[in-house]
Amino acid sequence: MSMSLLLFILVIYIGMAQPVQQITSEVIFTHPLDLVRQFFVGIAGSISMIGIIYYICRKTPVNSTFYKILTWLGTVGRYTLGIYVVQTLLLERLFYTICPKINHFTSYTLIDFVFTPIVGIVFSFLSYYTVLFLKKNRYMNLLLFGGSYK
Image (cartoon, rainbow, N blue to C red; front, side, top):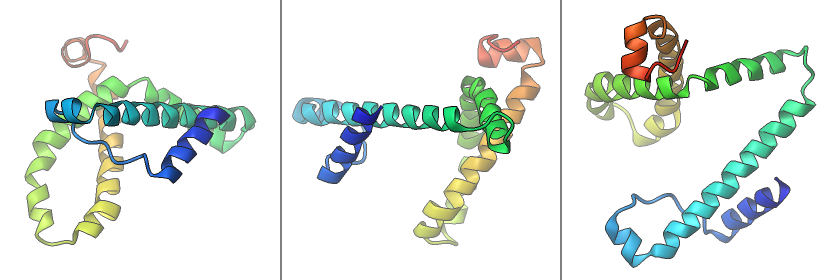
């Protein structure tokens, strides 16, 4: 964990952690090392985060409120496939019609730093509770989630 964290910090400090490009055939053929670099930066960052969260979980007392929050987040993590499916349906179909109207009234900074995180959190909770509701129906569970929830 510490090695991947040091590598991740070093890569960010050097400036190699550029935003991920859309992977097209042009990127693959003209800049193949960028793709490899992005892959290793992502792996180092992921392993670092897993290690940090593991360390936090080991040091948290079992009877604390923070431990209960972590346990609840672990329960939510079991439903990530369902949350992804429902959130895709909700965001792509329902929210897509509202976004162009909001862009006319606010600045991009406000949208990036205030509106987008709020929408993400609200839709994540909405998707989680929708999955909990839909998993009770045998046919919806099979159709949307492949029958993975009992």
